[in-house]
Image (cartoon, rainbow, N blue to C red; front, side, top):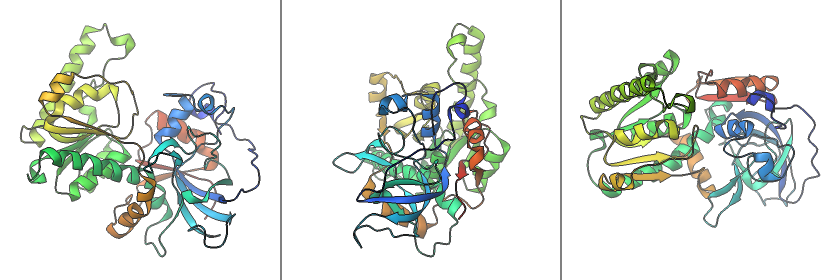
Length: 377
């Protein structure tokens, strides 16, 4: 539960009782098993880019919109929904949808009245529950990271489709897909690799570099470019800091040129935002696509519209995915083995969730797939 903010992200969490009424028609009572810690939870705790409590008009909010739950009870006529008591399901994070099935408000984030998975029991709209495949060979921790994969699937479909509108028939093997580090970018680059592209991604630790290399992605050590991000407000008049940044940027662009035969990045997965956005654009090839489905560090971006037009750069922005596509994405993960690698997660017990929140915010968690356990299987 997130309440008054008086420090770091972990300090904004409070363990308390959260009452809710009886099940209304179409609702399910569920027992969260594993939840996935996501950037939207960090945004909620830091009150940026919005204060979700104020936005929802509520004093406290129970976070957690992605995870595996066990169904305890369903208030519905027999056969009305696809879930039954005892089923293990994935929560689809749709609060309010538009007419095409895309999310306008996210469940357990900015959608009023929604109760998340950071609770021993919660109730939700049964239509948001997607059962796990019967007899799946994959573990619950592997499935619990699905949010990053569902998001990556949707974003990749749109980015690749846009790229093909301008580069209709060239071999993907001639082109580089690059990403700033993160779990969604990792999932997306594995799709790009399956499509035949060269793939590379930044990482800031030996553990992550080894992980990327193990899964066929060329790692680019972020520590080689220590001043890559835009100077902060206090550094903007520091000429030496700007010179160091120019050196870091040029060093990274050299790496990109070497990986792309001098052409630049054909599809750049940038879920960071403002601190690195100018680097992303400088690294793009002609007819390149910059694609994003998140905004970890800065939502306000600017670019030279004429330069982007002349270079025929396409900008793709997506959010979540389309609810009717959910079963198909799940089945693609199951049949194609496109899922979080076994053992790649890290799991925090429920009492350690504030520690998880602080570790995520400060970049101390090595895994791309941080999870929290609420109830035993």
